[in-house]
Length: 537
Image (cartoon, rainbow, N blue to C red; front, top):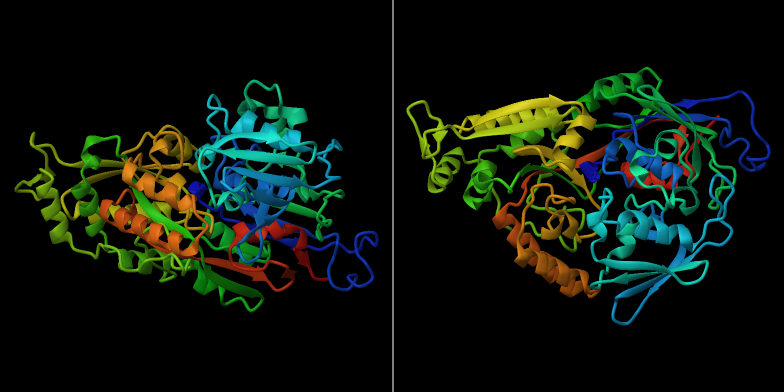
């Protein structure tokens, strides 16, 4: 997700190139006049109405890509998924690793013409992210920041509670800088409809031109963008919740870029000779979270039983059409230096699942139901959101768990409602979602005891021993030491099953042949190069 997005999940996106008949000479050099159409429009899709304030507790996958086009961060992703300077030009660290100094770009202006300075960075973190009264989305990512201060007009210092080697990676991960001159003094920035819904002001390559709720968001290029004016004039996000509709629009020519959220649609998409398909494995993991604030899920044997009950290879074949591999933890195989394939695994074994439930205190009645000491059947309420694979995957989980005597009640909800109930309010017993995380082994925010109930630790799992390992790993830049510590974390996570790990999906991106400049199949990385996207004449 977040991102549930993360930030649990990455949004489903698509693009349409609509060509205009004339060029704009001032934006296209003679070398590029024949290479791309500077008046082109690319139309993408998002699954629900967005929130233009990225730090809002309700902003997730439906908002991520739109906001990263309007706003900029201190760092961003390179095409090879490493953090590189953006609003910052570089950074240094103190010897003890507790102070990071970021040098800022000169001459950057907000889209309303006001100058960007260190005051905007300080406000974003001190006024929004680190403000405990606001509960900013993603705040748990930055729990180790003690304060952020200005060091003159064009430098900021991040003062840390503990060393954090992956800070630049997290600052590249959906962490936009917000305008202090507009938002400072606003009592509740999450309900400021003037900014959140009508007129967001960023420093990014595009700015909001028009938003019609339930229909579309139209962006136009920022002529003053500091990193090179975008090669397309307009980007439109159509609000299309259904993945089948998105695929149909791709094949009809109405969409020219599609991040394919249902791999079963891919075989049909590949029949179009004008469509190119890219696939890649990223650090995304689908999972089941069981709410460990509830006594029945605090027992590790119950969590292990639920995992043994799932035939994950069969689920990957049925749901992803084979475009994925079984997950054993939060660090995916793409991170070759850190991924450990030898930790405890949970192959499909319903008999062992039943045995573990019995060891946890459940018995089986004549009807084959797993019942507690009072004779009541083990029942799990499992809300699911209308997004990508979530509904069919949740229905398969229901079948597998009911086969070991557990009753599963599914409530299908619109995506934004699901975010409110599950992520914000933690009103659930079990849920199925995904995390798309920075391509760094630092997964602490998703497991930190301090992030239970309020952060990305959706299952509310608490383990001081795991906290200690992750914090030690954050404190070192030594590769061998990091590998050792993250291996310890993977071993402990595999045994404890704070999440039920399902699979690492392949990212699939389909593009029409006249769309270029999209470097790979991971749209979350590609969006940081959006000013280089172009449409050939």
